[in-house]
Amino acid sequence: MALEKEKKVFGKRYELIEAIVVMSGPTAMDTPMLDQIITTKQQLKLLSNIVSDQKHPWIREYNSRISSIDNDIRLSWEKKFKRKKALTKVIRASLWKKMTTAQKVKYIAKKTIFLIVFYTFTIGLMIVLLGFGLSGLF
Image (cartoon, rainbow, N blue to C red):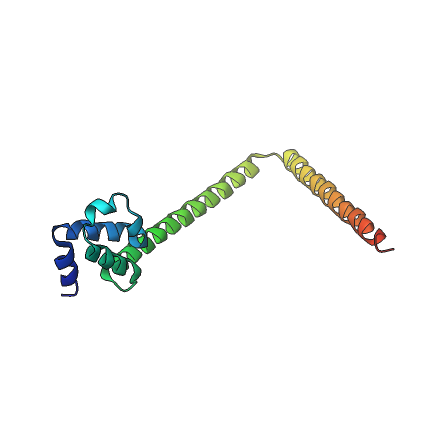
């Protein structure tokens, strides 16, 4: 088997070191108290080789575990976002249905006036800044 060398070098601590590498991946060399687990230079060199080798089975397991966690997080976030969006849409629709015609007209008028004032202010500010920019050219 390919891992016989690791079993031979690490001895009784084989499972412990395997767990550290699978859980920590490339940062296994920064694990606290590693100097108490690794006792020889040969073990340290082998651990360094394992951590730097992306094709090693332990690092492959670490990468697959991390990618599955990332996928789970992404999928749960997307599911939560879709649920929130659908709920917001339902709430807005139900509130719109409960409004009277006068309330709807008032709501649309408020929104329209706000947007007209906002865009007028924004365009006016752009024209003023453009004027300052062009005045510096002459």
